[in-house]
Amino acid sequence: MKEKLKIGLFVNSFIIPSWALSMIKELHSSEYCRIELIITGNCQRSEASLILKLSLLPFILHKKMDALIFSGKNNCEKGESLTQLSDEVPCLNLCITDKVSDGDPEIDILDKIRSYDLDVIINLGYGQVSKDISEIPSFGVWSYNFSDFTDKSKDTTGYYEVVKKEPITGLELYSVKEAGLKKKVLARLFESTISYSVSLNRDKLFKRASLCIPRIIQGIYE
Image 1 (tube, rainbow, N blue to C red):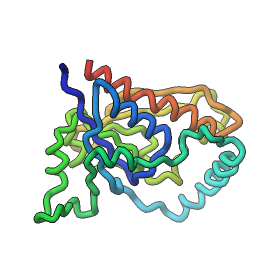
Image 2 (image 1 turned 180 degrees about the horizontal axis):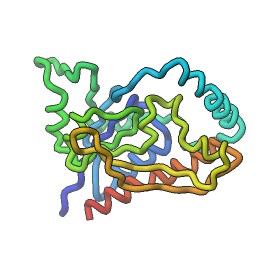
Image 3 (image 1 turned 90 degrees about the vertical axis):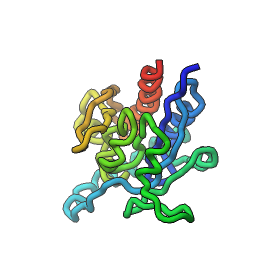
Image 4 (image 1 turned 60 degrees about the vertical axis):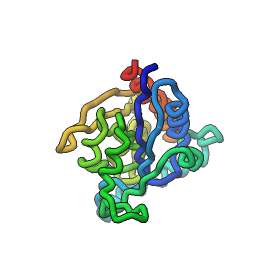
């Protein structure tokens, strides 16, 4: 029997969107891969300027009002806990110094990640994963381009397409493997824009996103 692919997760916290948790459960219970490691911590970020923060106010207000009207119980962005999976899978906390203490002398966390021999790390957080980590898994670190935003409050995915009445809303999945954080596009996802609601438009796109990564990983396995 073929060995399952080994998958790592990179998250900012143990609370993640429901669409991401649904995807993780599918991966972990599949015949082609298994979640072997959860890495928590902040990706590389830059502090937003006051001008940028002010410029985002209309987006933030619009999104909140829209969510009050249109986000129901099936909201794909609702926060869900990774706690159950973390009881089964080892977790590493990535701190600023890239060091972790296990009660032993400090060990380089990069060496600990290497010891899991991961095939892919899926970045479900905001901000880019460091190039040192991206070089570890065989197929690199995979991220959707919303992770290019430094935090959730700045994530305008699916917003401007509604405001500008654009017919199509898109999302990219890319991998980073080489030094220099060079991106390789793995997939481009497109959905017709739901022109009257930002929340529903994002919801539709993220449902598609939850299906994409499992299909690609299954393809690599087969």
